[in-house]
Every structure is written in structure tokens, then in C-alpha cells.
Length: 81
Length: 81
Image 1 (cartoon, each protein chain N blue to C red):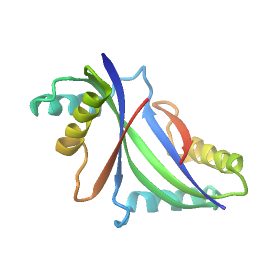
Image 2 (image 1 turned 90 degrees about the horizontal axis):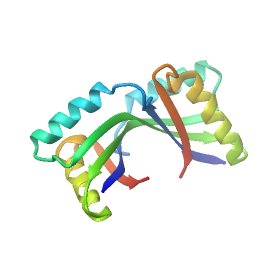
Image 3 (image 1 turned 180 degrees about the vertical axis):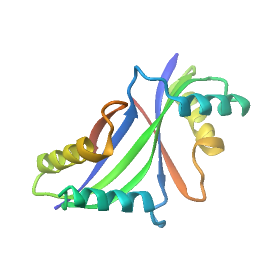
Image 4 (image 1 turned 30 degrees about the vertical axis):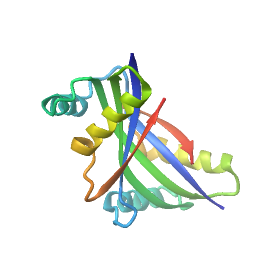
């Protein structure tokens, strides 16, 4: 069975996100002054062949730990859709 | 009121995603051969000051159209959490 898994990789909350700060500046120049904070991460969509949802989740976690996220600067969340 | 809005920006399904293709190669080198397809986009977390959820959504849509997503290559989805 093929499972569609989403991995959200975001900068750790304790860290400054310079890309997000630059985007806030851009949005304010466009007149969108009601946006107070922006943080930018990655969204990775995986198609995983597995027998069960729990196996697919395990594979996605392994991929995230080994390659997709850098734990020094980022955290990840896995979801199905 | 402050609303936390997530904007998912992904490459259009019709387009090749070279970054995703590179990651598939990396995952296969790590022994994760059950992952068939990878697509990589952005996840943007916004803190929006608005009176209602619908107003926050409207602001997020405007930001996505004007700055966050490039409609030639990307589509976006807005969600609350």
C-alpha cells in the first residue's frame, strides 16, 4: 500500500529565523501590517510503500532523522493525509 | 486576537521537482528504498492579528498571492492550528 506522508520541518522556536524576518519586512512594504511574525520551514511530501500506517510513520521518522531535518536547528512533525 | 496560520507552498503537480528527486537519491543511498516519491515545498507559519478567523484567512491569502507563492510554479494551501 502507498501512504502519503507529510513531514513539516521548522526552525526551532528558540532560534532566530532570518528568512522569516526578511519576509515580514516584505509583507509590511506591501501594506500587510497585521502579520506580526513569520517563520519559514520546509514541507516534504513522501509517498511511502508500507504494510501499515505505523510502518509508514516509522520509515518517515527514520528519513527525517537521517536526512530531512537537522536536529541542531530544526524540529519535524509527521502527519498523514 | 492573534491567529496562527500555516501556509503550505508546494511545487505544482505537473512540474518536476529536482530538489525532491535529489532527496530520493539520498534516501535510497541510506537504505530507505520504500520511499517512492518526494516533493519539497515550503511551510510558512504566520501570526496574524485579526478580528475573526475569516479575516485572518483573507490576510493570509493576500500574503500568499502577493509574496509567498509563485503561481507559475507553486500552489498554496492555508490551514489553522
